[in-house]
Image (tube, rainbow, N blue to C red; front, side):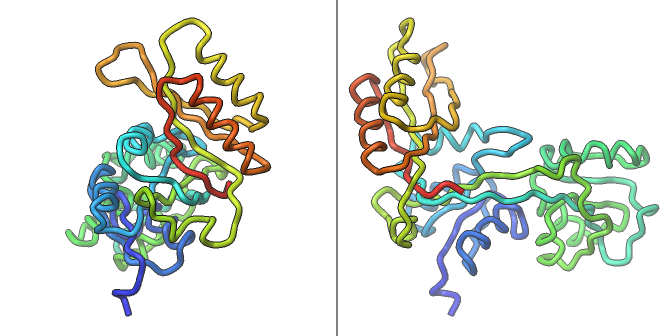
Length: 280
């Protein structure tokens, strides 16, 4: 039965937010945990995974720059997106009391989003760890009764741990946007394959390093009638002070997206469509 499940690669351990996002987006899947994001997409390109679920942007922390670079570099395509409400929990071995905790470990982004709670407990030594769910996996494997992890609820379930304090994040409006990414040409799991018409497109483009070229590129998008919802820039490796621009646009009709893409291709020295999908 398990062999028929979709194989979805994620960065991080079982029980991570990426694992939760994959389940919410696709239902029951076989998760392939990876140590780094490059390994995640390498599995997709090689065909070892049917797709990958990657975080692209957090409402508090901002964009995941490395993932933009990988989307441009590799023959992959965004086919769906979702939003996941991020909740951080203080997780311990079953039976451990708050006063027993001496150290709190988690991914540095998670720790930074729980600053108020951690500052209210100066007795805790706060230590960065490679992964949120990985912190729970570690404390359970080593039977650490004086260590707590900061991780999603799913991590506690995965490793048999216990949530000691739920919802310790500073801000309730904490969301991460995830992309489902597949190999180029593989549309089996796209929004179109589900009978849903995309209304959002992600693009990357590079322009000549001359005055006004970016303004004119954005004007082309405006003239096509699409709504620019995000713009991000990343350095071009080996070309100091030159950039690749990443944009998300919303559109009401497919022809508007085609017009926008064509207008950019006429103006820019490089354009790559990263994907079309239904906005979350």
